[in-house]
Amino acid sequence: MKYCNLCLQPDTRPNTKFNHLGICPACDYFELLKTVDWEERFDILQDLLLKFPRKSGQYFDCIIGVSGGKDSLRQALWVRDKLGLNPLLVCLSYPPQQVTERGTANLSNLIELGFDVVISAPSPIVWQKLMKESFEKFTNWARSTELALFSSVPQIAIRYGISLILWGENPGLQLGDLKTLGRNGYDGNNLRHMNTLSGGGSEWMTELGIDHKELIPYQYPTSSEFELSGLQIIYLGWFLGDWSLVNNGMYASVNGLEIRRDTVKNTGDLLGLTSLDEDWVTLNQMIKYYKFGFGRVTDYVNEEIRLGRLSRESAKILVEKYDNSCSDTYIDSFCSYIGISTEYFWRKVYGSLNHELFSIERDGFIKPKFKVGFGL
Image (cartoon, rainbow, N blue to C red):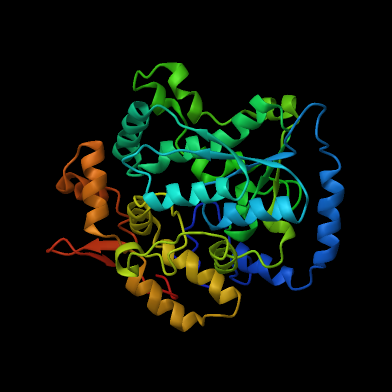
């Protein structure tokens, strides 16, 4: 395990690769941004949008996937008020046991701001069954839900005959998931290759005996379907020089965003700004930490380091203290939902532990073998 020489990105992140100087892709990209002509990029976007004119009789210009959170709220307002487009917002709805009141309020805020929203709601029975199997098979309850989350947007775009999807950040450039890189910095049609969508296949779902029709929400459209529909995903983050977690959060907050109020110790959410529509993501971030040696706090601080608002030394302290944070309350509610005991939950977590990075003490405490910022 090695760390980027500039931030605290470890090389254990799936699909990432450091350059010969020991710099992660996200830091490498950030350095290039210092020389970007943002007015020129905006002109590129304007020219690009001309290639996707509104079809005759069509009411919407494009589709934006939303949760009501900071990124989707900023995108929706910018696309409508700056670009002058009429976007159709698409939201995947969680079951009542999972969605938070905060998430519902934030989605309602988008509607109250004057946007049209289509809500996709897969069968809650199938959702629960797939979530449990995702945890059983991958120790990652979000394996199935993320498939539905990412698939809903292009599925609805195809059904509405809308060829343009506007997405937020480019995970290849801004996070380091290199398999998602397209023909250029704004081409998002390789999003299908990100670790979330490509890892594990989908055969495990069909093996559960669920009717094929009920699995449709979890199927990302094929490349052929994209091509037949003329579908194009464009990363808006490539065109916005001030795109960042904090900036998007501030922009969204003054436009009605309700943030998370729980403590960092319980959530690992330093600013209360991420995944606001549900809380079980906290479990997944903790488990991600035990698998790969980094969690939600690492992603937070890396961006702040690049922006010069946090030193690498100060960031180390935050990562060491909070990167595996998760309240027992969230664990208990999740276990109750999928019908397992908390003891079984922890057996699964211990079973998926990366033993190259962690050891288990006699009292069950999971201890990192690596030192944050130095690695192994």
